[in-house]
Image (tube, rainbow, N blue to C red; front, side, top):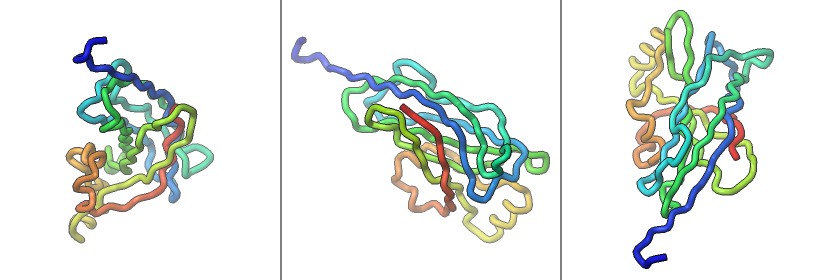
Length: 174
């Protein structure tokens, strides 16, 4: 190897988003998720999809649980560990009254070690900054959304957000 050659390492992630659980139950007709994998400047995807959407799903016997079984598989190459990949899950719902609305965002650091594990993350949802905004969101059924949800991954300005959170079981990643 020459002195100026840069060596890269490869990291493979595979798994699935099995389900999302809502402690208070799901009252919308259909729920779906969108995922996006966010990575740092030295990382680049070698194979796999960095974004995707699931099918529409609804809660079954358990009103707190919506099953998706959505597969994830991606391989990254990098020169260092800074900017380790994170999985951003956006949970959305559709119903006849309000159309498409946000249920929340979940951000999960991709596992740095081998093996299968169940990952959980809080499901955060932005709240309106004013009482009038809260009233308008309740009236229309449309909750506030982030213009760029990737800002959750940086963590720099998250303290400025007014948000509520609930537990979210995201599934298994290997």
